[in-house]
Image: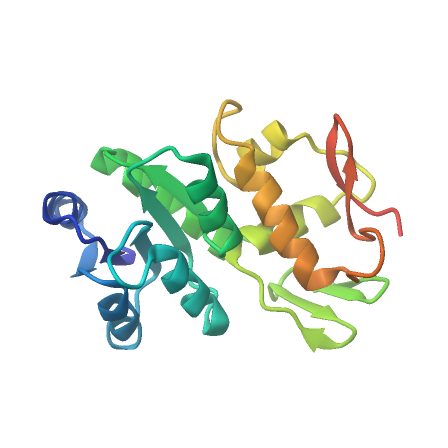
Length: 227
């Protein structure tokens, strides 16, 4: 079962999530502060991080930025509010998904499994490396190079790129991407898609040019290419 690092300062929420996940077979390490969570990363070596957005001192967003400096560990943000700004900031910081509290254990576990599937499951089994301009995509090896240099992608960023590039020039609506990449319903939050596209573009696109790889078709969605 996945090892879960939980960073949550509210004792009732923290204990509820920890007990619920442990009862389902997960090994959970709980931390109260962002600093303690960062210290636990190397010692506990989690498979996924559940990170409260509103932490004292070091916020969840700051923790997320710190993690993303050195790791592509899957991250799910926990927020007690449906505040648009907070959610967008968390996603832009590198979170793969978010959950609004309170949430039942089975919902949290379902999100954990969905995020980990994105991190582990290749889009297909093609063994060759695909060359798209300056971008090389190794599907089997889950590796991406830009001009020969490795590109570190979070799980959601990698799966989105693999999904779009598997069928160049095909347009995918945001709702379809939510279903096929995030395993969410068609009625889920399309900001997950838009924030992930922005993070992905920042890593693979030339900022001085219009997007070359991940293109927007207004009113329709996104496509890969044409190059």
